[in-house]
Image (cartoon, rainbow, N blue to C red; front, side, top):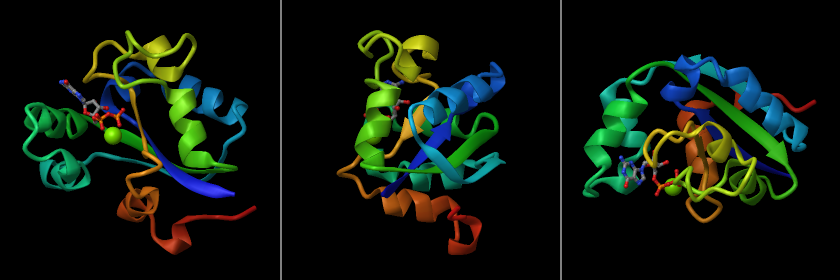
Length: 139
Ligand code: GDP
Ligand code: MG
C-alpha cells in the first residue's frame, strides 16, 4: 500500500463539492488516513507550490490556493499516487477523461478543483507538508 495527498482546492470547497469529491475518491478504493480543513496563507501556498516558481501561472496559483479554505487528505491504496491521478484526470478539465473529478467539476486549467500528488514528484514531501506522523491513522 502507498500513500498520497489530495487537496480539495478553494473553488471546490466554495461550491460545496467536498462531499461529492470525497465520495468519488473513496468509491475508487482509497482509504482516508488523515484529513483536515485549513486556509493557507500566501507564504504557505508559495512554499507548497515552489516547484512551479518562475512559471507564468505561479503568482496566480499562489493567490488561488490561498483564496479560501482547502481540505487536505492523506489517502492510502495500492499504487495510490498513480491511481489517484487517474481518478482526478488531466490538469485541464476540458482534456480530462469523462467522469474524472476534474472533468465533472473543473471550470478551467487553473480552477481544476483538486490537487493530487504526482507519482514522480515526491508524494511523501507533500504529505509531510501537512501531516505529522501522529496525525495519520492506520486502521
Ligand atoms: P497538476 O499536477 O495536474 O495539478 O498540474 P501542474 O503541476 O502542471 O500545475 C499545478 C496547478 O497549477 C494546476 O493544477 C492548476 O491549478 C495550475 N495551472 C497549471 N497550468 C496552468 C495554466 O496554464 N494557467 C493557470 N492559470 N493555472 C495553471
Ligand atoms: Mg503537478
